Structures are given as structure tokens and as C-alpha cells.
Amino acid sequence: MRWNFSFQHYVQLTRLQMQTKVTDKKVQLFERSLQNNRFCFVEMARAQGFLSKQEFLAMSEWYDWVENNMDIGLDLIVYLRSCPKTVHERMLKRNRPEENCVPLDYLQSLHESYEHWLSTNPPAPVLVLDVNQDLGHVENLYTLNAPYILGQSPPPNSVLV
Image 1: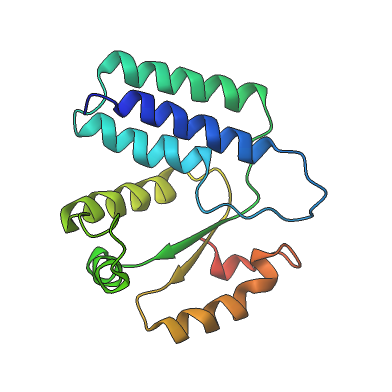
Image 2: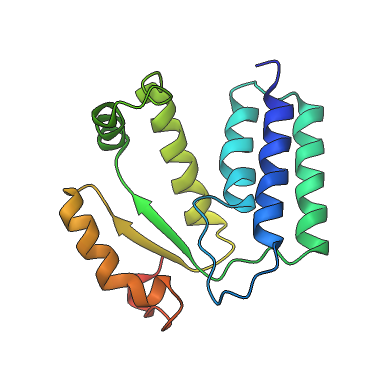
């Protein structure tokens, strides 16, 4: 992809802006982070040939500099684990135009990327929620884990990866 480097760089910039924005809130929730973009999406782009070696090195060095010179730390990662087939079915059911063209094999690669990152190099404790069940069950999972997610109490080690 011709514009992948520009796109990834822009995504990293917007994530950096979000994660370093001064706020008076006790808790900030992000759908995605600098860390997952670097270790999942940028890695996938490199592996799939969408980033050249030089572009990948530039992205990596930029991320390393930010990590070493700015406070981008995460307190907790909440990983909504679902098999790619379930994700794909939910996307098709939502029928959003921007999601209708996402192939199942892309979701499989993304799933593998997340599984690898979170099992080998997580930058924070990981709370894994199995969201393969119906959405009512997912709501119950959130309610049960809300105190951990919202920083009201530390999650017990038994629920962390």
C-alpha cells in the first residue's frame, strides 16, 4: 500500500495526542493505544509488505523515542478476546459500509498479532474478557469487571494474563 507509512504515522500521532492529553479525569479509556498500534498494526503492515524496511525502522525508532521520553504508560489493558469468525459475523450484522469489505483472513491475522503481543510483551497487566458469547453476556462481563476497568480496585492476579 502506497500510503501505509503516512497512515501509520498519522495514527501514531493521534494516539500520542490522546494518551498525553492533560485531563482532570481519574481514568482514561482508549479503544486503542500507541502500544497496540506499534506492536500489532505496524508489525502486521511490515509482515505483509506494506511497509519497507526503512519505513518500519523509522516507525520503530519514533515509537522508541516517545516511549523513552514521554509518559505513555498504561495501567491496564482490557483485551476483548473473540475468535475472528465471531468478529466477522458481528461486523456483517452491523452492516456498516466501512466494515463490509474487511476480510476474515485480515481479522485472523490481527487476532494472531494481538495474541502474540499480549502473551509475550504486554506493557501493562492484561485483563482478558472472553466476548465470544452473546452480547448480553458481554454486558454482564463488563459489569462484573467494571471496578477493575475503572480503576476502583486492582484486579486480582487470577483474572490477569
